[in-house]
Every structure is written in structure tokens, then in C-alpha cells.
Image (cartoon, rainbow, N blue to C red):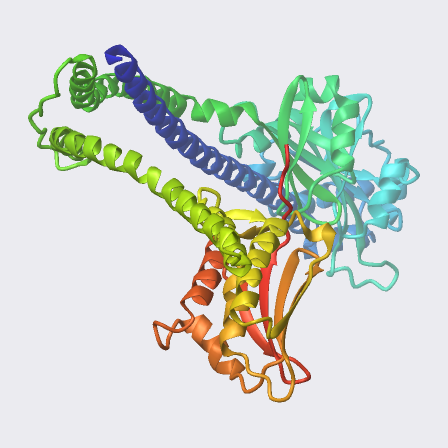
Length: 594
């Protein structure tokens, strides 16, 4: 017992504390997970926005640099003023004018870029320029004729894009990215020419673009891509791009919205993907490995794990101490009860534990029980002597009914010997009535027995009233086994004999019954007059009125309700011809016979 309750208390305390710890850790982990995920998503959105701003700055720098290179009055004059100027001088003037403002791109984002001007074919210079421009190599020359490339697809696309930047890559130059822009000069006022100067081409190493994208990355493992019309222009992880080019194309074709993110699996890793559009054609895509989330949480999880171990040890110690403190008073009480059960004498009280809780109440209750046992034992000793005297009286009282029956039987025999048959009949009926009523060990009987008893009572009343009334009993045989309280109908018949008065005709009492599903009703009707039905029913409900009046009827009504429920009992009603109908309502229940 001692080990059982101590172990059980320890287990319960340990389990409850462990559940509390697990619930606490679950809440903390859930909070940390949401917090880290929010930080993770915020950092990625920040990287995406920052990278998009960098790409936007790059494109803006190209537009500004192309404007400074090509939109000057000196370049306009050098292109159209050819009178008296040799081709070599014009070439020098155009080169000087092209490089007059910045010479070569000096914007920090364009420090690795080289710019070349392809003079539009509308100018005579384009026809005289013998140097052929090729994208494969960059020479010291900065001005070329557009005639050699005007039929190339990239050149036509650049013209179609008007003042927007067009970007492309060549299979034979995979390590370089080309940007081209159709440039105009508003200083060209010669009506022979439009303001279209030509196309400015920037060439930039792919590794330079990669470095520009990497500058905006806040951690390793993040992959940034710059795309133009869905084509990847630069990627910070060329190995990933080359090995999973098909998967990357699938990712690019299903990019999330501005404030959304998506997931994709590349190179055995799961990435979170965000994207931002610089304009309709340029887009920045950032892929961040989700394992970074767990790496950032690793230190926190380690700290939580150490905290959990320390807390578990504390829980074990606290559970052991608390289980001992809680179980010790109970074990003392248990030992006292075991000793009381085994003792041959009466148990003794034990000192009460002062704990101001249920334990103290248990000790006090045990001591109260011990005191009650002592008090009951003393009372039992006093009652034992009385019990013996009572048993003797009970045995003596069993003789009295038999003495009455024998005495009445003798009276009946003497009446017969003297020719008093009515007296003999009344004595016989009285003996039967006494036997039925005194045998009250069973409070209920079959309706057929109740009717037999009633007939004995009517027999006596007929002799008393010299057969001055009619009694009709119409109880169907099928209702003979219905279970009813004893001495139930006789008080109602007696009430009709004593109180019913008929004006011009002989008193008639009729007993009949009916069944309504679970309800069984017995009617005691008479042809009397002048009964106050409302007062009689109120008297039955409230029990008010003369205490000496209707004791038997109230007794019957109360017994019926005690044996069933308040919805059953007796109530009175007036018949159509003015007579009184006393209705007994009972639950329909048949006597079970073996």
C-alpha cells in the first residue's frame, strides 16, 4: 500500500509536470518557428527588393551613360558636317565627341562595362566607315558603322524596343552579357536626317553581373537571378543553373506574385522563391534554401534542449519530494485503518495532521468514525437487553390474532346452534375481512382478491341495512390479475353507503373498471345527489378540512401516490344523472405469477 500510493503519486506528479513542460516547449517552439519564418521571409523580401533596386540602378545608369555619350552638340555636328572634312578627320571628331563627356562608362555599376556606338546607316559616315563591328571582340575603337549588323536579329530587336534597353547573350560568348539601346540626339537639326544617332552597345562580363547580384545577398547559399524576357542574364550560382536548367526554367514560368512566395526543389534542396519585376521585361528572382531557417534556429533549439534537460531533472526531484509529502499523511491514516481492521478491540483515535486541507478533514473524519463506533457499541449493548424483551412481546403478539379468529369462530358456532344465521354469516364475513386486512406483509394484491374482500364487506352491510341498497360489481375477468393496493375500494364504497342520499329511488352503488393504455381506472358510482365535487377534490389535493372526515379515502389516495407517482390517485366527478363518480387511477400492471 505504501509503495503503491507513493509510486502512483510520483507518476501522476511527474506526468502532469512533463505535460506542462511539453506544452510550454510546444508553445515556445511554435512561437519561435513563426517568428523565425517571419524573419526569414522578411529577409528574403528585403534581398529581393534590394537586388531589384540594384538592377534598376544598373539599367538607369546605362540609359544615363548612353545619353551623356550620344546626346551632345559636338557629336551632332561631327555626324552631319562633312563638307571639307576628310573621312579620317570626321572619324576622329566623332570618336572625340562620343567620349567627350565620360569617355568610357564611369558609373560604379558600369565600371566593368565597355560602350560602343554603331552609327545609324542614314549618315554618310556609316557608308564610308570600313571598320567592321563584331560582338566577338572589343577593340580600342569606339565608333563603328551599323551597316555590318543592321540585319542581325539583336539589332532589329533593339530598334523595335526604341529607347528601352535590350539584352542578349551569344552562344559563342557565354561569359559576356550585351546590352543595346537605340539612342537619339536632339541636337541633330539637319532636315536630311532624323534624330536617331544609332545604337549604343554595352558589353559586360557575366561574372561582373554575378558580383553585382552577390553584393545584395546577406548570407551564403542564396541564389539570385536577373532575367530579361524570361531568359537568365546573370545567376550567382552558375553550377546550379547549368545542372538544373530545365527545373530553373520551370520555376521561372511559375513565379509567385509581388507579396507571395513559392517553394521548389533543386539540387536536393528546398528553396523559397520570391520575385520582383523591374519593368515589363526585367525581373529579379531570389531563391533562398529553407535549411537556413533551421540553421538560424539551431542555437535557440540547443538552448531550449539544455533548458528542457535541466527542467526534467528539476521535475524528477520536485515530483519525488512532493509525492513523499503528499503520500506520507495518507499512509499514516492507511496504517491506522489497517490496524483498526485487524484489532480485536475497538480502534483508537489518532493525532490530527494540521494541514488545513482535505488531509486534515480525513483525519478528523476517521476520529469521528471511531467515536461513533464507540458510541454505537455502547448503544448496542443497551439495546440488546431491550431487543430480547421486544422479541418476547412479538412472540406473544403472534398468539392474539389466532385467539380472535378462534373466539369469533366459536361465536359463529353458537349463533348457528341458536338459529341466528345472520349473525353467523356476519361473523364468517368478519373473520375473512380480518384475515385479509391483518395479513399486511404484502401491501398489494390482485384485483380479484380485492373484489372478494369487498364482497365480504357488502355481505355484512346488507345484513346491517336489511338489504336496502343495490350493489353491482362489473369487473371483467381479464382484469382480475391487475395489481392494486390492498383495502382500496372498500373505503369508497363505505363513503357511498354513509353519505350518498337518493331522493325517490333506491340507493345503487356500481363498481366497474376501464383501461386507457398504461392507465387503469376503477369507478365507484352512486346515484346520490348534492355532492360538492370541487371541494372534495381540493380536499384530496391539499389535505385540508376536518381531520376526522375521510381518513380512509385520504389514506387510499396517499398510498396510491406513494406506490406510483403524484399523477395517480383518487378524484371525484359528477355523473350526467347527478350521481357521484369516485375514480381511482392506477398504473396498469399485472401480477407476476410463478
